[in-house]
Image 1 (spheres, rainbow, N blue to C red):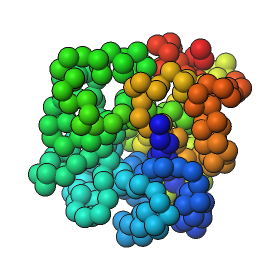
Image 2: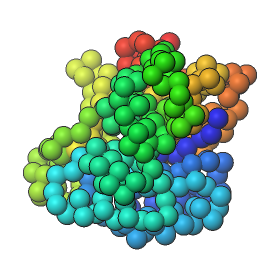
Image 3: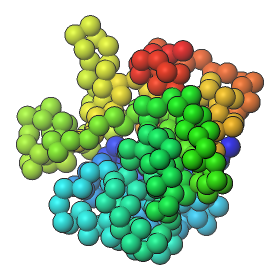
Length: 290
């Protein structure tokens, strides 16, 4: 079982991002995903910056993947995607089917991110035929669902052609929109957002009338209000999950990596907080903890 670090979902200043990745280089993560996956207006790090970070991390012994955006809305964004596809050095995580199309045109292998709607063995087999080498399970699916898909006969002859990865820690990316909810929360239009996301390095919390944190707003992306945390489910993953993904947090990312690695065999269970959840993995309501 390997451990991966997903792309930073929030909008952090350039100096903070570079310092974070210097720490990542010295960490025990096996795989690192780099790239802006939420909003093309977030340009603290440009493509060349990400490429330089990727090369630095590779020299530190990490396997690096470049992550595409999840929602493309303009020709300029597609031109930026082409840079990722044509990078010539690193595997690409496709978070949009348009990215898959570009990668397939050049017969390039790819990772299918959790935003790709791959819910059954037939879609999975089709994607493998298109070049998929790693499948990131959609975040709302359960461990049982994953096991059922992988045990289907239509998958049996290609099971060695791809690996599986599960988003296991962090606020879950649930939805994307053409509207910017962070800008709207400040009574701004999307076109006049003034990059206000940078003021919210952990997103903006949205609570229900009874005070329950139900969502986190992150630009055009809506995240789960509770933090997803599968640290105590690792011992059940060994026959189905090859890679466990942690999403970068403002603080504590490396401490949680240590806790995950210590509990791979279930011998060092962790106490979850009141705002941690694991419901989707256990076939419960998403906000539940089993």
